[in-house]
Image (cartoon, rainbow, N blue to C red; front, side, top):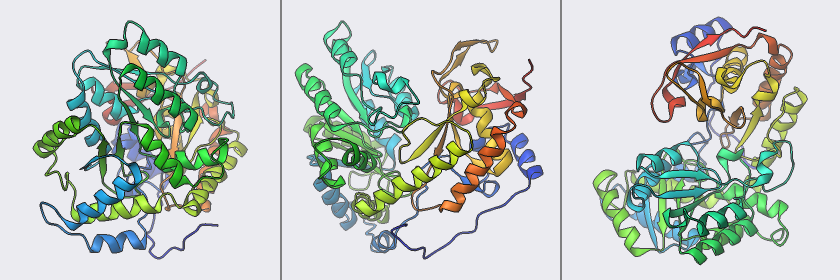
Amino acid sequence: MEPYRIKVVEPIPFTTRQQREEALRRVNYNLFDLRAEEVTIDLLTDSGTGALSAAQLAAGMAGDESYSGSRSFYRFHETVTELTGYAHILPTHQGRAAERVLFTTLLERGDLVLSNTHFDTTRANVELNEAEARDLPCPEAKNLDSTEPFKGNIDLEALARTLSGPDGSRVAVVVMTITNNGGGGQPVSMDNLKRTAALCRQHGVPLFLDAARFAENAWLVTRHEEGYRDRTPRQVAEEAFRLADGCMMSAKKDGIVHIGGFIGTNDPQLAQKCELLLIATEGFATYGGLAGRDLDMMAQGLTEVTEPSYLAERAEIASHLAHRVRAAGVDIVEPPGMHALYLNAGRLLPHIPPHRYPGHALSVQLYLEGGIRSAELGSLYLGEEDEHGNPIKSAPYELVRLALPRRVYTRSHYDHVGETLAKIAKNVDQVYGFRITDQSPILRHFRATLAPVPITG
């Protein structure tokens, strides 16, 4: 059972199908533009959408709002230093701010960034600095049905070839995303992380963690990796941070807060450069764009997130939803992770070709049938077309992510998701595709406008 009791509740909206149809037309079928009061179950993201604990709220009430040197900063700094072991800690208002400050400082035009998988804002911040973001997922990740436990690993052979090959001199940093969000929420093993760290040291390349979901990765390591079954998630997390040269983190995930993040590094020169940019663009180095109460709540959340009882329930609720989704006849990326389930929309909707965005089609249908908001991770997110709308590049898989907010929804809410998917799975021929009517040059899935396209034949 859940290791907490509910002290405060918030009503959720219930809409009619007609209201949802009107809402979809109004937002040009982009679910990001829906108003919150039009969504019944919001699984768009787990970023900043979790429920705060009583202890976090209490910590926030004691927040020190001094511009410089607040008590809140020093509590936050001590908590993060004990967790990560890094010599230099800089708060930021969220993860993409940490990415921007770090990559703007670290990268030059033509540099190469290697990763197990870059997520969308990470890739965008690399490319905004005119560098190349290259993914090296492990071979096991290609089999969506495989139950291999560490499909989030980086491909060590490809990493070694790149570092020692003609592109080796271009590699500015290796980023290991734990867990691998863009790769189906799959974890990274400690063995893979150790070997990656050794290769980076051998070639003089810094290794940074994208640590947004470090605690969930640590929990899965304790469940599935030999030599770590008797360790606590906190012990695994501490070891993981110390294998890397630094990290960037969106604390809106495993900090269980609504806003916040940080950069950690052992490099004093890099830290100094990052601090100067932080002060110029985010805020002074002891608040980084955050209120003192945010720093206090982040410190408390980073303490709570490695509690075994919390993580065990988090894993169980994901398993519960996975069971309901499979029972509905919908395949997922196996094995289920913790922060999200990834639906195999391409397999469910084979009549919709990639350039008609089956993942987005399933997301729209989830909202239309059940008021459920989700996120497409397919060809709308990763694909490219020419000026006439003809496909140039499609995503390797057409997925839909159901992100699970922390401590927000109960099993009956997730049962509703399963029931809605079962209804869709029985009538897949009624699901239509989409075409893009307008898009931005980067991160197009956030702002694109679309129109439905009937699928015939």
